[in-house]
Every structure is written in C-alpha cells, then in structure tokens.
Image (cartoon, rainbow, N blue to C red):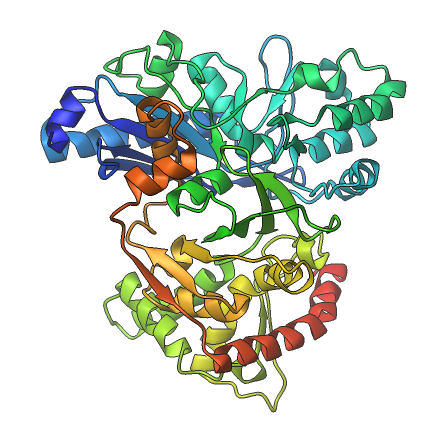
Length: 530
C-alpha cells in the first residue's frame, strides 16, 4: 500500500508532540515511515516570575500544526485527512496544570522549566525517601500549598500538558505511565502511582483541611498499548476546525517527551539508553536493578511500559550554543556573505573538533535557567577564561559544545562511576546531533561510552508517540513494546556508532574539573543579579 492509499484509506497513524519551541505532527504508514508532517513554532513566556504557555497558545498552536500537516498532505498526495488508524499525544513532561470542577484552569500552566519549588521538593524527598525533582507535578502542587495559594482548595484534577490535551480530545483523564512517573513516584509492582506515598502525602497535608485526597485528583495511569479513549466530536473540532476529520479514532496513552525519545531510539529494554539533546537535555538509562540510594541528580522514572529508568535531566542544552552561532551569522551578514544556517553550524561544529581536547582551558556555562543538578535555582549564560588560556575559535566552539552536555556528564558520572550501572547501547537524538558526527563525538567523550545515532534521529518525539499509537492498534496478542520495536519497527534500521578516543575522554575529564571549579563564578553572577 503506497502512502496515498494509506492516507485515503484511513490507515495512517498520527503522532503529535508539544516540544519546548515547536509543536510537531507526523503521519506514519504501516511500515512506520513518516509520510507527512506539520509543525508550528511557539515560545514560553515568563510571567509573574514563572515560565508558562497560555491555553490559547496550546490550542491555536495545535490547530496551526495540524493545518500545516493537512497542507503537506495536499501538496504531496492531493488528498485530505478524514480518518486515521490511531493518534498519540506527547508533550514536555512534568509541570502543573490544575483544574476546578467546571474544568477551568485555576492558575497559568507552570512548565518543567520553573525552579521555584525547592522547598517542596526537599520536603517531599525527605518524606518519601525518594528524589523528588523540582519540576515534578507533585512538587509544584506542594509548593502551592506551602505558599498558601488559595486555588489549591478548588483543585479536582491536575495533570501534565500531554494529559490535558488528551483529556480535551478524548474526554479521558488518563496518562501513560512514563509521563505519570514525572508527576510522582510509580510503584514498579503495580505500574500505578505509589499508594504508600499517596497516603504519606495525604497525612502531610491533612491539617490544611482540603476537600480532596491526592488519589482523587490524579489521572488514571495506563501502560503502553492499553486503550486510552477515542477522538470525540468536540475533540475532532478542536484538532481540525475544518470538520473533515472524523471522530472515533482510537488514542494510545498520552506520554512525555522522555518516553517518546526512548521509543524513537529503541531504548526501552534494560541496559539500553538514550540521550535527547535540544533546548534541554536528558539521558535515560533503563535499569537492571534499583540504585543503592536516592540521589538528587538522578530521577527515577519509567519507560512507557513501566520499566524503571534512571533519568538525568538538564534544563539547559543548546540555547546558548545557538545564540553564539547566531552571533557568527550576524558577522557573516555584515560581510555580505549569503547565510545558510546548516553550513554555519556545520563549519563551526566541525572546526571545534580541531581544538584542544580540554578546550585550552576555556569554560562556558549555558545556564539560561536554573540547573538543579549543579544546585543553581537561577542561571546566567557565562563564558570564563583567563589571560593564559588558548583563546581560539576552535577551542571556543568546543567549550560551547562541551557546555551543552557538561551537566549531563556530571549526573551520569554518578550512575556509571558510583552506582556501576551497565549499559550496552546509548543512542543520541535531537538537534545537537544534526551535524553528522560532531555531537556524537562530544557526547561519547563526556560519557566515555560509544554513542549511536540512527537514520531516524531527526524524527524525534512526534515519531516516537506515533510509534506508540501504532503499537496500541497493531500489536499482536501478548507482544511486548520492546519486542514490537525490535521485531517490527527497527529490524532493518541502520545506525552509526562513534566510540570515544582515550584523548577525548581525558580532555573532557580535565575540562569538567575546570568547569566544577568555576561553578562559584556562576553562583556569584546569579547572586549579584548579573
């Protein structure tokens, strides 16, 4: 069946992901290959001291993304989307969206990027004896309680962005277990929210006298492959105001971007892992056994089918790197030279590889926002050097590339050096790997392990959630998610692996020592509001 027949017959599967800077939609065929796509650029806003996206931006962005997808289908195939085999919704994990009994949003959506929840996260970590990161949904809820926010008494439901969009399209208040594991801890034996910790939380807040219990306001948790509702008539109009898309299309459980990244890189079995590197970065290592103790650098989440995962999440990755590349673009424009951004990135990235393995002593901090792994509630982008350092363009760009994964290295050193976690394969995906070979080599040096990049590395989370939607409607009885990915999706997929050299590993280790010794400089910049 060719692509047009797949579309016209309603056999294509749609995946939609709300990323930090782009909403993307991907249609895949029965062979799981993308056949059309659409996108919409959007940005978060900093309002009243918090990072947010408005509900208007959510829905107008979704509709414009879908309209762009429809246009792509018309241009490519002279066809219209009227029916689909399945749909999946994914979005940035964590954050806080709280609703009252009338379904109204009580306070503006608080995203993963906010770091105002340190008191709550610390208290819950001590209560649960489990690392509760600042960005997790329950940390946000408890911080609202600590701050005495009046809306808390009116909460009847809270969820993530993916859970919210899914709810409005299907009427189901559900969440995939991977995304749910970024709200609060999951009990590995049940694949559901940990009832012991729910009881601990209820006891903690009981003196407040709220009319709700925690279990009553959480979404229902589903595992990959479980039915998660169908597109309602109202949901169809929300997604496609033109009215062409039919209701009744089945949905897979909504997931977070970490889970879709694992799926898109075939990293859902124990001893596999992946690194997503874009606006933020995170590594996901699927564990064989529990870690020896909680660690504030390591988040314990799950795969979309409930397997435990050690996650190192970094709020910052390529934003500062991109800002410097744009500076060079401006210089090129001043010279009157035509600008091709792919060429600019490619030349600067590859030139960086000619620099010294330790960047000649140059250090960069890419902290557009706070970085919990290194203990910074706020961030300031900084470039640090002394007069004796080797200040060359190659070293400068290499330092920016190192900075993009420097915090990721610090967190993963805990896993690999202290916890002795073993991994057979780590796959990279995201914008850092768009220039072939460069991001791979830098990350391989940082983690001291080979890094693979697949042919589909650029497809990202929208493709990953489309795969989960396909799994939900096309899996064989009893077929697990890891088996479906290996036996059906990735059986003929090619990957390029780069192993680190001893020189690059030693250079990154030396650079990391410089980086950590300069952290007080970053702290001083934050303290002095510079």
